[in-house]
Structure formats: C-alpha cells, structure tokens
Image (cartoon, rainbow, N blue to C red; front, side):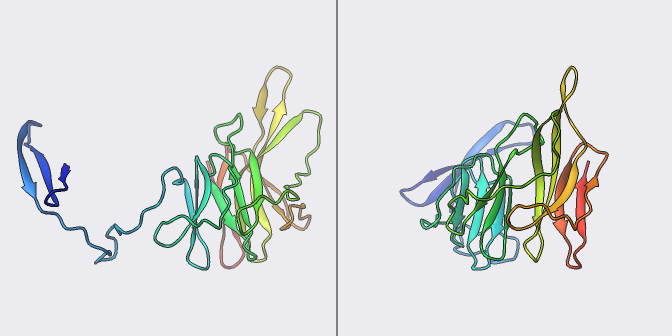
Length: 219
C-alpha cells in the first residue's frame, strides 16, 4: 500500500488467487487514537527501534526496553525518557528490577551462542554500578570463565542465576552442565542456597513463584 498525503487516502494493490496483480484501488483508512477493543494495536505507542529483545515495566508505569542498541527507558506512550543514561551494554536480553529501582542486566555475547557473558547492575538513572559483580565460587586452573545465562530476582532482592563454566580440556574447550545458584543483592554468594546442576544443554529461563519456589526452564 502507498499513502497519498494530499487527501489522506491509501492506494492498495490487490492480488487474486493465482498471485497475479489484479488492480489498484483507493481506500480511506481511519487510524484510531486508542485501542477500541482489548487486543487491538495501540497506534499511539511509538517506541524506537533496536530495543525489542526484552521489555520490563517499572512500578511507575515507565518501561525498560533492551536489545542490540543497549537499554532505554520509555514513557507509557513509547517516548524516550531523557533522564535515563543508556549504559551501552549491547545485545541485552534479560532485565530484572530490584525493589530499590536498581536494574540487573545480562548482555554481550561471549563465545557461546547461549551465553550472554556480562552481568551489570544499573542504578535507577541507568548509570553502571561499578562495585557490583557476581561472585562465582568455582575456582580451578582449567575453568576459564563463568557465563550467566538467566536470572530472576526474589521478593527480598536476592538473585537466582543460572550459568555455565567454560572448561579447558586437554584438546578443546567445552561448556560444563549449567548450575543454578543464589546470590545476595550485592553479588556475594548466598551459602544458604543449595546449588543445583542440571544435566542439559542450558537453563534458559528462571522464574520465582509466589510461594518462593523457583521454576527452571531447561533444554
């Protein structure tokens, strides 16, 4: 379809059942200002491109959106919030908000297609908290890296994380089975949580249920 701005009409090209071009017809189309029925697209929402991997609502109605261009904060109508500082963390796919407004982000691909590699704590204005890091307990000369894959934040702000370890074998590098552990809000290991190792390729999703149990999505 093409839009004719002179009279606000659209020329629409129509194909028949055989895929042949039948005709062009002129139609008057009306764009509704708000969604009239639940499930209709709201044409007033206009968000910028490049932040479509994950969207998380804040308690005040604003939205955190992340993707290949980093992280932005949007007003409810999709407009950019200029008070937010995009930290520039690329390829962000997972966001979680703590009760004080701090944001945990996973992003930045590593050598594994299932690994995001970088975990960051962002302050409520989007700036990076340089004092935060997840303190993985595994130490071995053959462990080259710990790669976070998924996370979830509990009601008490403790952080449940699934991750894999990159192991240097005698002839090649390979990833060990995924592990799920819990960390305190500052990134320190929570020793009261029993770690779980899953015999699968990846634990890709974590969710905290209302009763405190943790749902693990693995494949």
